[in-house]
Image (cartoon, rainbow, N blue to C red; front, top):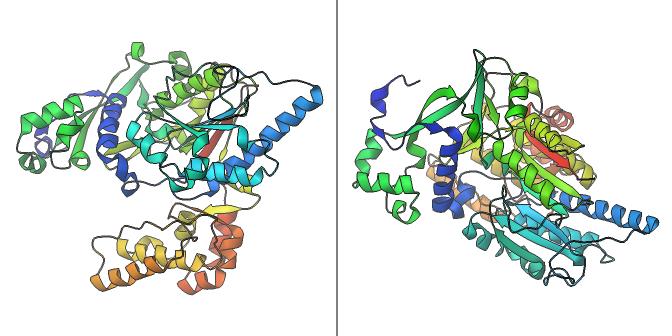
Length: 489
C-alpha cells in the first residue's frame, strides 16, 4: 500500500488486474519503442547465434531420425496442408513448417536457417523448410524480414501477423516445429495468492508524478490517448512509461475471467498462504494452441524463458515475480504451472532443463554466458556503472583472441551517462577496434574452450581461474533461463 499518497497526485487509470494493465502497457510500449527494444533489454537471440545453432542441430537430428524410422517401417508421411503441392514458397510437396512465435529482430531465424543449411549437406531437410515468423505487431515482422542474413533464405520465409494464443488462420496439424524465445514473460500473467481460504489476485492502478504532470501541457488529451492506446497521439507527448508509479491492492479472483481454474486452484494448494505467485495464463494458452496446430508426428514445441522450475522456489515470498524494462512488465515464468496445464491438455511428456544445458548438449561443448563470466570478477559488485562498461569491453577484447563467429556483427554498446569524457573516448575507440566476427553482444554464449583459451588475457584483467571453472560446473540457479519441450507423439 502507498506510504505517501501525496507523491502520486495524478491518476491515469483505475484499479484493474495486473494482466489487463500489462496488455495495455505492452501495446503502447511496442507501438512507441518497437524499433528500440535493445535499449531496454536484450535476449540470447538478438545478436548471438549459439541458441539458434543448437535449435538447428536439434531439429536436423530429430527430422533425420524420424525420416529413417519411416523408411524402415515403410510408412509414408501424410501432410495436411493447403493444396496438394504444399506451400508455394517451398517446392517440395511435403514442407516442414517451422514457426517462430515472437520474431524479435530476425536473428534467430537467420542463424537457424544458415546453420541448418550448413548441416544438411545432402539437402534432405533444409530445402523442405517453410519458416513462418509470427508476431502480433506488423512493424516487428517488417523489421525482422530485413535482417541481412535472412536474404539467402528469403524465399523460404513467410510472416503471419497474429496473436500466438489464437492462430485462427493456421489449420490443425500443419506445423512441424514451434520455437518460442523469451515470449512467455511478455504474455498475460496474473499474480495470485491464497488468503484465509480464498484466492486473491493483484490489482494495480497507474499514476504519474506531479513533475511529469506539469511536463504534459494537454493533460485531458494525454488521458484520452492513454486510455485509447492512441499511438499517434501519444508520440506527441513527453516520454512517460518509466514514470508510471503503480498502486497495488489485492481482491478476490473473478474466476469467470480465468481459464484452468481447477488446475490453478490445485496448484495453489502447494503454495503457502499470502505468497504471491505468477500465473502465466498467456503461456498456458500457447500450449493449447500449439497442441492444435502441431502435426501428430511433429518434432515439437520449445519455449525458452527465465523462470523457476521448483515449487520450493515459488514458495519463497522474496522471489522476483517480475521486472520492469522501459516501463514494461516482464514476468518470471512459473514452469511447474505450465507443465501442469500441459498435462491437463493431454500432453504426456514435458521436459524442462536449463537453457545452457540444451545449448551445450546440442553444440557438443560446455557453455556459459558472458554475463556469467562477468559475475565471477572479484570486484564486479563494487564497480561504478561506467567501470562495469569498461570491464565488459576489456573482457570482450580478451575473449576475441579465441572467439570466431561465423557471422559478422558490430557490437552495439550504449555508454553510461556518467562516464568521464576521457574514458568515453578511449572506450569508443575500443568498440570500433573490436573485430566484426567477435563476441556480438553482452548477452552471448561462450564455450569452455574460448574462455580457457583466453585465460592469460582474462587473468591479466583480474579474473580468477578457479572462479571461472566453478561457474562452468555450477548447477542452474533457482531462477534461471530454461527450456521447456514437448512433442505430440
